[in-house]
Image 1: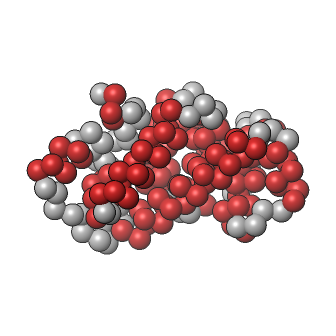
Image 2: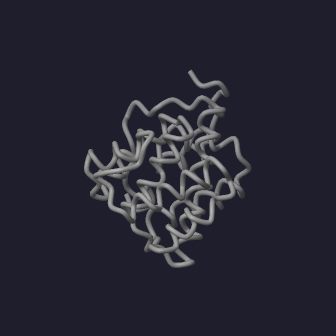
Length: 177
């Protein structure tokens, strides 16, 4: 049971919620509509319209979920990761204390950078340099956006006590269905 009750939806909100019937989407109706709409646009752009490496994005999100102790985020993004082509071994590697094989050097460097950002806020010069070896400035900033976005969501999920969805994960763009 959630720690914060799910909002009662208006008929218009029920219709909106039908596009992405997950518990997180339902709980977000507590947010003012303009903020919720903006957040939704940004999230959909990150997941479905960005040129960022989808496998890397999912590894980062899984890492944020792991470090944030957010089972809901891990559950949802295991499914997204599989859809993007991650193997079970790669997914599990992002969900362990020590980052290593079967992840590539690139993936390990970027996940170590993510750890540094998540745990220390101000990443070390060495972890930043290691990430910059593999990422353009634009990709580096998108990496920071992914980390921050999913840190925010993990905190919302854990504070509200949002339960893992009984119907499973949503792994496609709800607006395209």
